[in-house]
Length: 363
Image 1 (cartoon, rainbow, N blue to C red):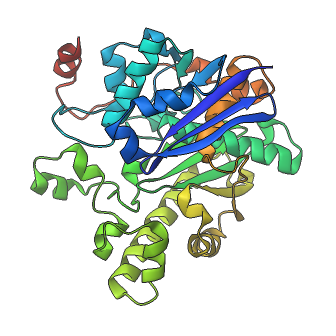
Image 2: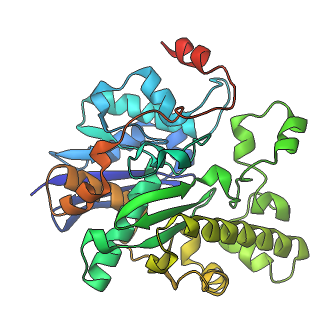
Image 3: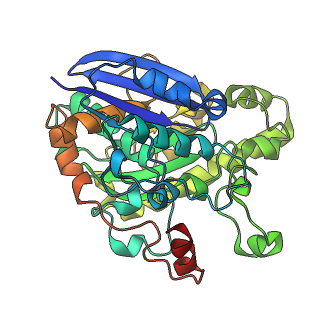
């Protein structure tokens, strides 16, 4: 039996999910704001699981599989992609937690993001960074387990589109034959807080684009109520015209992403389902809109959850840890080819920028 732990560093909460074979040994959540103020709280939760064999640590944009105790500051930068050390945002907490995990010598690994995967063709990676962060891969693993158990099939027979509707970001991934073949990351699709892809001319007019710009301009900002929850925004849409427009814009953005990524499959008929995950998946408003708007691609349903509290990304992270060790989820992880991940998120970028200076400054 292996004692494993998975962590999902979300925009709203950090979730922790621990397993000992089939037994759940940790299932909890911590508000992200609390963790930013006191990163040591994450270590306190981690240490409630004694004798951890392996943990999938919060990985951000990810790295080719790497032990936390081998991380350099350059590695941490690549997981965060945070240029301005004076700029305060939620990614600060992730970096501090990684340093604390390393200092405590807790057995953990960083897992790759979508761009690192060998199952994604190189031509789809050109001029892309955010094709899906590491936690999106973890959610996809939960989806693979879901389909395997629902249809009694092998990992290689799972085929679906993942739509993860988070508190800040929404992402869409393509899974064919149990492998991730493409992804559209949260900075490229409108989210509840994130603006999604920036129009090139708008980016020119903004001039000085900062990390904080990525976290704004989405549904909550369009509606004029940036502090409301997802549920509150959907309720407000019943009587507020601006919020209705905001949600229509969001649903249109997601629909375009799903229809677009369906073209990445060898045959669209292979798409068995569209699986919804994330905070928004639990809201009837989005289930109904997604079912209606995406039915021409594939049937839509909410991904099964294997916990009471922790989100599906944390669950999938623990499944990955188990599979890496050779446990019951090894067939999923082996087929996913996580061990074959290579390269950097800055590879295959042909838009000129000071890449060499950026890297040299980190050394």
